Length: 464
Picture (spheres, helix red, strand yellow):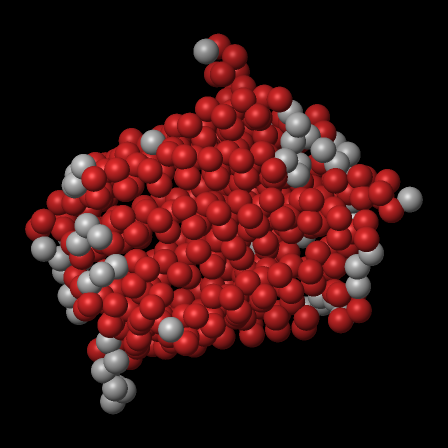
């Protein structure tokens, strides 16, 4: 206990570390917060159309959720390499990482766009047997899916900009995009200012338009200001064998990790979707509210990956090890504060939704479950997405995440929801038990220090 207190004091006195962490974590968290606010406003607006519409749009967005995890896997895995190359002042390979990431992300987008546009009803039937939800969700999905390629381009460039320390521009662009999205939602969902009243389809058109604007703005800022990742066609798309081997060795487990984990969490939705529209509406609203808290740790995990990657790329392994410990301490302190805030504001936020008392009560119970599991879940964010990935220990991250969701989470969702027929909050608690397992295994891996690696130097050795 004395050592923990001493380490905490040392972390709080390390002004250089805190400055680095805040400069990256705060803009990333703010960007995530802004996106979460859009989702919150979307859900509130759509909620005025009824609980079936909330369920329909929530389930349709599960397709985007899986796709976004695939893109996050590509951007996260490539971000690990880019951060280390930036620490080694290797702009040439950063541009190659950007180009190869774009190819993979856009190819992944195409796999999701085609079925979602051509057979949206069939896709919706995967998640629910409610004909009302299928009908509304199919219309929304067919339009919203067209935004996926633009999302892919944006996310790759944002990840690369973070890796080289450029975090302000994405936040400013997100603010602009959010204004476009919310304004169009208001106009198109309800038919204001002479526009047609499109309902859920209007929300999809608003999303598509906002994503197009965001993608164009990111590319414009990157190339007009000649940021380090702004390469021409030859710089983005020319690769040698050593580079491809290292990219795939580092990034492919992360891509597989997020995709397999995303498919697993989508299986939760299959269980929830067969528990009724009220259950789906409850978990959709609860998840949206939770995201307000989660973005803080997404920012911290992004800062962890970038800062540790920069230090290891520069050959400062001891400093990286010290910073990793600092991030865990910081995560614990922020978790305690976030638990209190989430508990205090939950009823006020729930009261902003036009939902029945039964659904409101279920949302409240789901949030209590989330609060109780927060210490484990947030540790996993920093450890798996930040520390372990920063040094390329991505295969172990894949094993931990995949085994957690498929060996524990998915069986618990179907056992609790369809076999035992428990309330949604109980099922959610059973599913979240995977976080305890992941925290235990992940901590052991962290202590083994196999993540402490200089990937930039390893590539130079392979190229010789």
